[in-house]
Image (cartoon, rainbow, N blue to C red; front, top):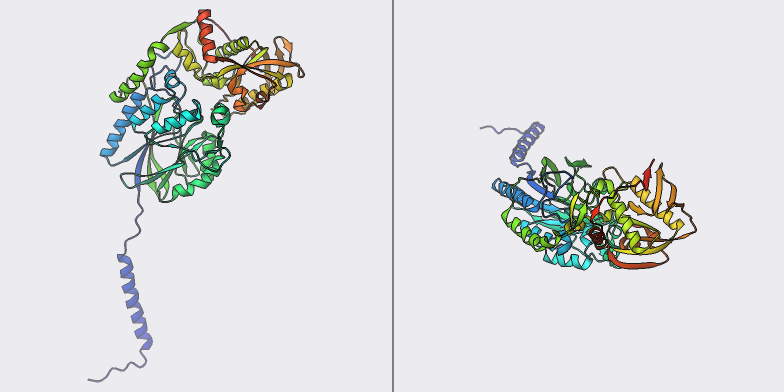
Length: 519
């Protein structure tokens, strides 16, 4: 057999070999699986600004039925959890803070009842709100010890030190393998929206700096980051714009009710209003650190909804211990005493004027101012119970008397008006002042014709001013009152003052008299 000559065939053989090798490699590549992009579903149930509303309550004047109630909320959450578990969907239940303070029940047990209820519910985590400090920092630490869930805040430090006071974040692996990181932030307004003495040992950091420090730690080994924010809707938008690494923001502080979550810079922002009137449900699909909304509902908590028996028994046990005392009738009101957030924080109301008049008389002062944030609810016509008064005036603020110059007084009034007029839409300035012994107008944002007991305000004159110890300590940013020349504490709380007045008066029929006029 003749030998086959290879001479002159070198290029041809090389080309054939190249295609054989390439083909083998391409077949090998085709057999490799593509990287799997994991998608997991999560249901987030959320509420915030609960303010101790464990029992159903009348939402608006004239409502025939009572809304809210934690036993109803708990039953709804229990049902959703059970259905989701059967379908293989994980559920997370969270609060955006301000869980306590605002009802007779909360005041009487100083937050204990709310923590017991949240423990029974199986709350997964809560942010720390400014009103968590209303019963004092030591009491908050006690409540955190009682809680079977974490209170989170990455922005509260020792006043003169580098150490965080509270747990900043939580990492949790869900049943379906999803790794969730939750981080909490607290409003830096806390020292001026709760009594300054309650937080004197703490420093409330600028939230973006706190998030810049801790967000990378939370992102490590997690698939989704949820920010539990007690900053308010405006700051939540800022956080979303500055930190796209967040997947979802569950917010509170401004009592905002969002029918649908906002999508800001790829971040979902959800708020569920206040007092447990709604439960928010946000279902998301998580993929590569982002949350895509599948569906969202705001579920109203209303009369006729079924209750969870265990929760009803727990809340009932606290309510019965208190009911005999708070049901005591202390007087009558012939009129609706307006303490609604939307009105008392924007204009003169009959309830605001009455309280200001009472503290001026108690302190034997020339004028009086009271922050509208101290008034937390209205009082309906008819019998006035101790519980009604506690609901309207839940804080243990004392009546105090200061001495201020006319110039200082003018600056105080100007701050009240500026805060009211510059508040973002849908938000209300708790530092707006209800007044006594004063009459003035507001035109184009400026004070006009300020009178003290019928005479023009004199800038150089010294006036005796009655207020509460919160404002006197510089609360709501009133540094002029903190710098007042003298300080006298009557030792009388606003609540006791009001109860004593109603008992002696018998029937209240007060009206707003035009002491604050907008032109």
